Length: 227
Ligand code: CMP
Image (cartoon, rainbow, N blue to C red; front, side, top):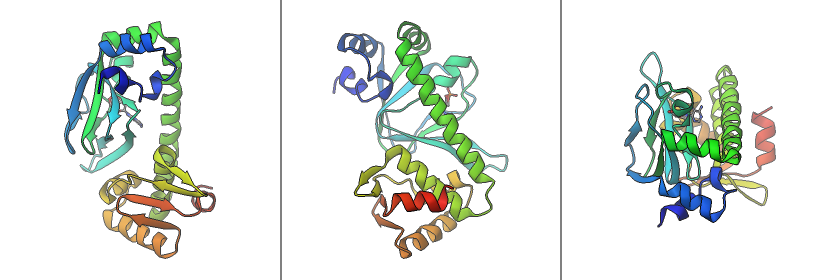
């Protein structure tokens, strides 16, 4: 697929005219990663901003005791690597491909020129960063909860926000992360995630079909776990 067509899938650029998209896409380079590939490491120098056009990635840091903490999972249409380009500091986290992933990259200088020349992109970027801060705030608040099951349920609500498809009051999450990654997001063990999901399934609160997780009554789920 041509770069301009790939770029259309990135929400930051939705407002742009064809000609503008063409101009920006010319400055971008396409890169591919396989499941488990490190795209970059925490503390390395930031040179590019990345736009996910296919696949998904996780944003991680290591805790003091060496455990992986997942800060976010990003899907097609999302971007990452903007922070170190904006503040001139090193990468704030590792970014790792969760599956076969295709990205477009934009060098620091071109990224800053695009933000300067297209204020609507800067505003979209700030909106997205505000959304990320809200999610992080919610995650920090949930980590103080003693109940691991509740933290896992809040992760499920986050996946539903990010990739859920509504079907008759049910919400389908087509690509649920693997149990170890959910555990690393919720600050618990894989065994606890496995147990909590089995209980939710037994109680007919969720259904699972391969990687798809279906929340059967989303309103009720939110009321029970996010209030
Ligand atoms: P940067 O610091 O350049 O490199 C790591 C990237 O991970 C960072 O830019 C952001 O794009 C992304 N990132 C860091 N923290 C979060 C978060 N809490 N939610 C979503 N993305 C994040």
